[in-house]
Length: 567
Image (tube, rainbow, N blue to C red; front, top):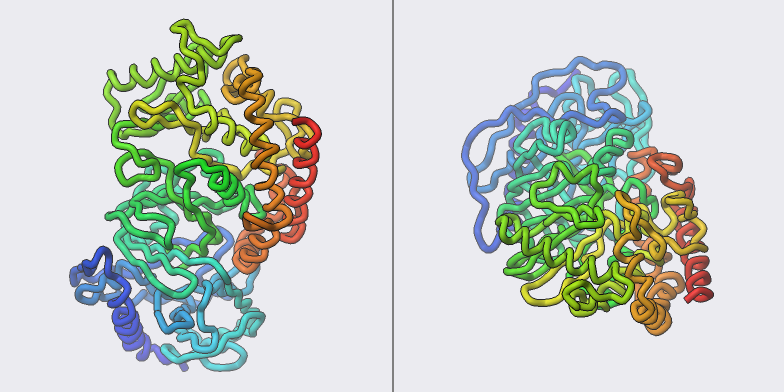
C-alpha cells in the first residue's frame, strides 16, 4: 500500500522549511528577492543520456504535483521541481542551513547520490515520488522523515526491484545550485550556444554560507569544449547575474563561467597556471575555484567556476577607455563582429569594449599592426621608428611566454591568447586563460612532443593560419627579449614551478589534488571519461586520479630539467 495522500502535504512542508531557511540567505545587496504567486507545472529537467529518472523496472508514472511560490521567497524559481519516480534529499548543511533538494541518479541500473561539501549525512530528510513503497536498507522511506545515509553502499528496494545505492560526498569545495525558469533547462541549453535561459543561482561555500541571487542569463560557451560535450556529456556555460555579486570571495562581478575541464583529468591545470601568473605579478589574473554544480537538483559534475576575461568599469580588467583583444583562429573569425587581420594574417578579435565604432576599430587595428611590424622586424623597429619595447609591456610578455612555454600550452600565443591596453599605457599580455591542454595533456603539435617536456614549443611556434612565427615565438628571436626570459626563469619563475612540485611559496600539486580528491571521485563516477586519451588529440595522463597526479609531477620534473639545461 502506498501513502499517496501524504505527498501533497509533504511538498508544502518542505517548501515551508526551505522558505524559512532561504529567508536569511536570499538577500542580495541588502534587498530581498521578490516573487509572485503563480503556480508552475513543476516538471523536472531532462536527464543526461546516462541518467534515468525512473527505475529500470518501468514503474508507471503519475502527474507531478505543482509547486506553489511562497510570497517574497521565490521558492519555485529556486528549489528543484519534484517529479514522478525519483528520490530527493533535502540537503542540510552541517551548520543547519538548508539550500536545495538533490535528486538521486541512475547509472548502470544502480542509484547514486552525489552530496555536496558539508552535508549532514546523519540527518537527511528524504522525499520520494514512486508508486511503490521505497526501502533503503529495509527501512521504509516516509516523506519528510529524517534518515542517516552514510557514505558508501546501501540496498534499495522499490516494489520488487532491488538495486544498490552508492552515496558519495564531496569535500573542500563550494557548491553551485542553478535553477532555471525553463523546466527542461539543461536539455534545452545543450541544443545550442544561442539558447539563453534565466533563473536563480545559489553559491554555497564550504561552511554552508549561501549567496543567492537572480541569474539573468545562462548559455553555452566555448569552442572545442562545447563540441566535445556532445561526446562526454559535460557542457560549458557562461553565467550572467542580474547584479554584481560577491561570489565566494572571488570578486564582485556579474559575469562568470563554469568550465567542465573534460581534458584536464587532474582538475587543476588552469588553477596551476593562474597561480603562476599571480606569483609572477601579472595583473587581472582570473579568480577561479573548483565547485560541485547542481542544475535543477541534478548533480552535473565538478566545474571550474571562474571570473570571465572582460574589460571595463568594475570588470576583471579595470579600465574605462581601454580595449581587450584575442588572437584567434580563422575558422572562428567569421562568426565574430569586431575583428580584423594583421598584414601577416593573424586574426584578431576585439573582445571589449562591447560596442566598438569603426573609428575605434581602426585605431586598435593600427596600434596592433605597429606592434606586429616592430616585433617582426630584424632590429625591433617598425617603419615609424618605434621599437616594440615602446609599444608593449615587455615584462608581461616575458611572464606570459614562460607560463605558456613551461606548460607547453597547446594554443599558447595562437588562440585564447589575450592582450589589453588601458588608455595611453602600453599593450600588455594577459590575462592567462585556457590551460586544459597544457602540462602534457595534449599529444603533439607541429611535430613537437608535448608530453615528455623535453623540447621547445612556444619558442618555435608558428601562426595556425600563416607561415610566420607566432607573436611570442617572434619575440624570442630578439636577443634582448630572450635575455629577459632567461633572467626571469633563473631569478623567479623556476622557484614558482619548483614550489608547485615540491611545496613552498605556492600550493603544491600534491596539496591541490588531495584537496580535490572527493569532488574528483564524484565527477569521474558520474562521467566515465578517465582517460580521455585519443579524443581530440588528448594524451594518456592516467586511468585514475592518482595516476594523473604522478603524471603531472613527472611532467614538471622533466620540464624543469629541460629549461635548466637550455636557458
